[in-house]
Length: 182
Image (cartoon, rainbow, N blue to C red; front, side, top):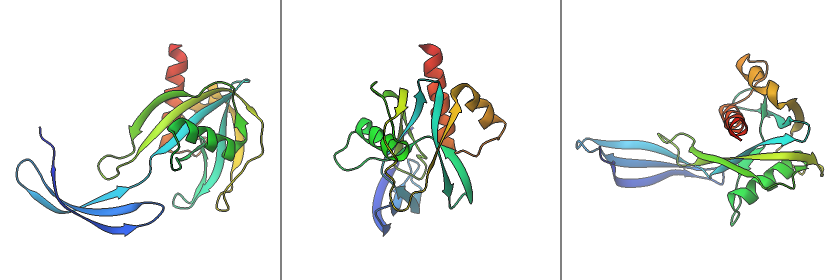
């Protein structure tokens, strides 16, 4: 198997949120795709945050495209010159007010959708978290912090008793596997 060759790239749209690029690609068999669209986004970080009482710290927010409210792990994109670890600590504090004296545990990084997107999500686990600050939200954010027993989260997802999204479900499973192995 061989990689595709990029013949030409043009930007259709650029914004602070992300870019859309149209590539012309040649496949290994010689076929040329004239309009392969790529969504360029910043990398994201997220974390499963667990309190000393074994509760997972979630944020509930309205998601416009999903047209509903979703419970999610704290997440966001990293800022300029920020490491992934620094980014997730900042995001957790801003969105929830929770911190921990323990260093975040790196669980892995995964491409979001390598067929059409260039970014990845980097997932951490934060243990023994406690509330230290008030939320520090952007003008466009309205988040409510919710605490759920960590051991109940999987059943709530499977039974569809909570609205969530793939990144939260995946982060939860990564954390659960890590905790079972340690």
